[in-house]
Amino acid sequence: MNFDYSDEQQQLKAEARRFLEDCCPPEAMRRLLEDDTPAFDRRIWSGISELGWLGTVIPERYAGLGLGYVELCAIAEELGRALAPVPFASTLYFFAEGLLLAGTEAQRARWLPRIAHGEVIGCWAIAEGPGRSSGIATHVDDNRLTGAKIPVVDGNVADVALVLANEAGGASLFLVELAQSAVHRTPLKSLDDSRGVAHLSFEDAAAERVGRPGEGVRLVDQVLQRAAVLLAFEQVGGADRCLEVAREYALQRYAFGRPIGGFQAIKHRLADIYVRNELARANAYYAAWALDTQARELPAAAASARIAASEAFGFASRENIQIHGGIGFTWESDAHLYFRRARHLSLAAGSPAAWCEFLVATVAGEGEPVSIALGPLPT
Picture 1 (cartoon, rainbow, N blue to C red):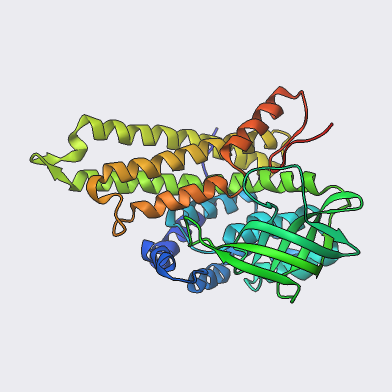
Picture 2: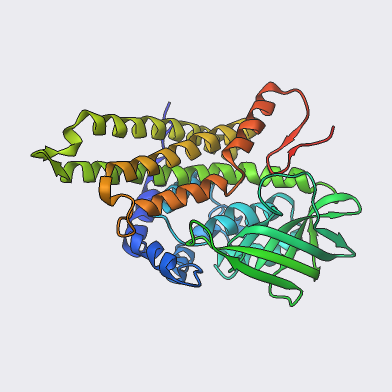
C-alpha cells in the first residue's frame, strides 16, 4: 500500500517548491524581522493567490478549487520549508475552516470567494492572555462585542476575525470585521515577527454569530484539530529543511583537515534529526488521511501529529544552530530564522503540553472532557 503523495500531488508539491524557491528566499523573512513595523510579504501573497492555493479546499461553488486536504497538506509542507512570511495559516487553516465547519450559507457566500481570490485576510482570536483558562471575559450582548484578545496571530494585518466570546447561551464564535472604529489593534513584538501578533480590543463592536449559541468551545476544538494537521506539515517541511541545511554545512565546513560531517558527533546529531523528522512525517501522513476522510480517528491523529511535528521542528532547529557552531547563533546566519518559526508554530494552535493532555484524555476515553484551548471542562 502506498502512503505517499499521488503523482498529481507530487507535481503540485514540486511546483509549489519551485515558486517558493524563486520568490521566497530566507531574505524575505529577514527583511520583515529588520522592519520596525513588520506586516507580511504582499508580493508572495499575491503570487500565492494567483496560483489558487487560497482556494485549495474551498468548494467550487464559492470560487475555490474544491480539492482535498491532502493537496493542502502538500502546499503547507512547502510553505513551512520556505518559512513563507504570509498569513496563509490564519486565513485558511483557522478562519476559513471555521466558516466551512459552522458558517451559514450567507456567511460562506460572502467570505469564502474573497478568501479564494486573496482579497481578505482572516485571523483567529481565542486567547485572552498566556496559558489556558476556562474563564472568557470577552462577551456579546445584542450582537455587540466587548473585551480583548491577546495574542492574535496576524491580527495586525487581518480584515476579519473569528472571536470566542460569552453570550447568554454560553461561549460562542463570532465573526467580527476589524475595520470598524469599535475595534482597536496594537501590534506586538514576538520572537518571529514575520508572523505579526497583535492585541485586539473591542468596544461594542458589531459581531455576527458563527454556529449555534453555546457551541463555541466545541467549534474551537474542531478547528484546532484541523489546523493542527496542516501546521504539522509546515513543521515537517521546516524540520526537513533544517536537516538539509545542517548537512550541507557539515560537508562544507572543514576542521582538522576534514569536513566536520565526518566526525561521529556530527553524524549522530544529523541521524537524530532524521529519526525525529521521519516519526513526525509518519504521524502527519496518518493525520492527513484522517482529515481528508473525516475519520473518527481525527482527534487522536491530529494530536499525535501536532506533538511529533512540534518536537521534530524544535529539535531540528536547535541542532541546526549547534552544527553551525560559532556562526549558528549570529544574526547573519539563517539558522535562527528556523528556530524562530519553530517556536512560533509550536504555540500557534495550542502548546504541545495542551495537546499531550488532550491526547491522553482522547485515548483513555474516560474522565473529564478536555478542551485543547481551555483545558478541563466541567461535566
